[in-house]
Image 1: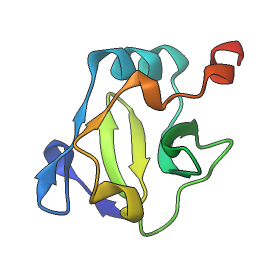
Image 2: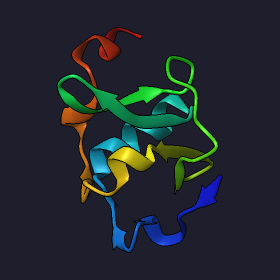
Image 3: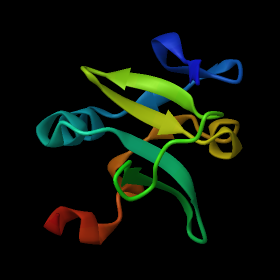
Image 4: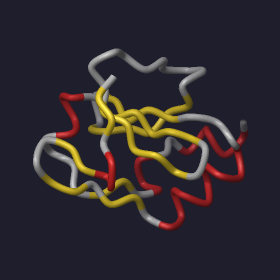
Length: 89
């Protein structure tokens, strides 16, 4: 997997919002930004496992894996990428 130090991917920064950082740290699990029919979505890696081609963004001891297909279009990872049903997990 490619390591994205300082939240970089494909030559540009991907900013992780403070809300997303808190969300990840509270759950203490890894997440993945992947493609859905509605656009990019942030899912637990228990739902959508990472791929070897994913970029990694570190949040504490956890990792956000970013699909190479989404990385080129992302500037920011926000809570609007978390599906509503995930609040019940």
